[in-house]
Image (cartoon, rainbow, N blue to C red; front, side, top):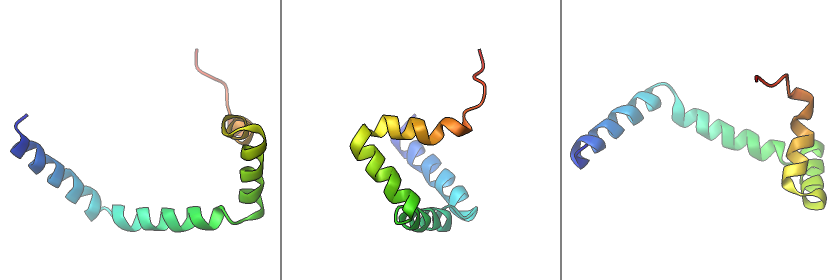
Length: 71
């Protein structure tokens, strides 16, 4: 695809997302993430990740929500 057409397609897609509220959603996500990191649960996760490693902390965090895996 020629670069000028790629730029126009990117502009079109971004404008579509912005009109659906992408920017305010991204801002709210950043704010909520910052708040969540400063809760007792957020601090506990940080301590667990530092002690046992990030992968282990995420595995334990997500385990209660894991359903059956498709074959």
